[in-house]
Length: 627
Image (tube, rainbow, N blue to C red):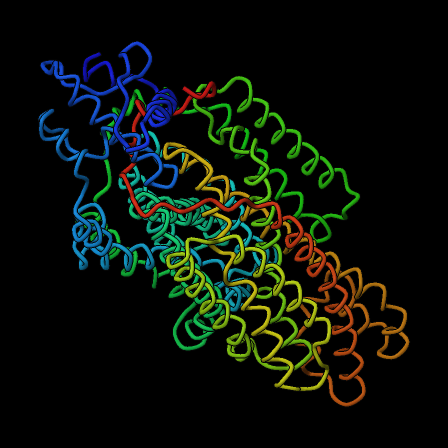
């Protein structure tokens, strides 16, 4: 068999052949004589020395066990003369050289290049996450300037909806055209959306620009994780995923503070202008420093390879479903035909997407074989529950600080620091622990356990300003949330082939985004229903006017009214808020507990310290049939 023939053999066949060869070794480690008909081996077309071939085969067999389940193939080493390969196979790498290889930057990068790449990826992710929350304190001013009440809702929702809907598509097109050009494209789309937002002259223009921003932001979020996966080995990437988790948490927390500062000290437009120089510098650095495989796929051929049915159905189904959740209880009653149709047709369309990916798509956006493993299913479900719980801290704790403790929107961001700092610290620590130990399962299970305890403590948040409880409870919850930004993703990536990493990461990001969106809606429904349930008592004690303002869908937006109430009236209103928030956190504790149970089914796989750059492009795409 020639070297050319060998390169065409499927990876699975190669693994089986090498394992059979390994099994035929004698006790002293030397290979037994094996015919070329029974074992696939690598040889130079000009080489006829069977001894050299057997020695090389023995080296490949040893590589199977030495790399924790990852087979060293022809793409992992440079081709050499048969005699040289045989000698290297027999002797193996010197221990000192092997140890030094683990300490040097991977793929020939210098430490400076690695630092610049990571900082640029962090900057891009920071802005994409920042724009989820920076607008919250600026929305009232924007709505007043444009004289639009409906804009109050859609300034934030437009970004989140488009962000979630386009995540799977970004991952697939990065498989076709390469990571770097598609990441730069996502940063460019985000930059353009930010510019239009800052220049908006009407509410419609601003909402449309926010949707463009969301499309780019969704691409940045998923592609940053994909690039980290391509840049670093499975053992190393936990550290960098931990850093990205820190960036996400910090940006989400300081967003409202920055938004309030820009709005009060300058203009709300700086909430968007601030993105321009930072993302612009990040674009330039990534353009020159980021070195990943570029397949240079022709545009026409790439467009033909896109699963258009899958792309349109996942975007359309996601938008319909999330639109239904956004409309429900706000613009329309939950029982209205509009809300019911949007939710039902959204679910049906997502079902059509799943059938298309399973049965018909040649190159699926999200391959269904990712969900065949119980471990993968458990990791995806745990990520959903984690996202469901995490966002409740960032989204609803400020309502507690403003509505119950009576602090300003800016100060509520400061009060949230114990939660943010603890989860940021634990996210980084978890990454280091994964790198040192190679174990991620205990972090997933332990994280969900502490999360369940921490969010259970939120049910005991005080009516009065007891800083011991306020700070301690947030720290416990944050320590539980921190490890599971990256650990479930690593669990998923260990169970898939390198060519499925982008699809698996996109599916992971999509599931997390859905968990976040659904969490906010369900939390709002529970809170509003609880406030509505207290309406008779509030009407009797506060009067019909105040009771109407504090009940139903008006409750969350009436924190300013509560802050202005004094004496016994203030106590009654704050008590109603606290009672509703406590009931709401029972739901989040239940989801955290569900995540804990599901995390027990995640399987531990030994993480490899070796890393081979994944090649993108049409030739590496995995079809629905697995070929």
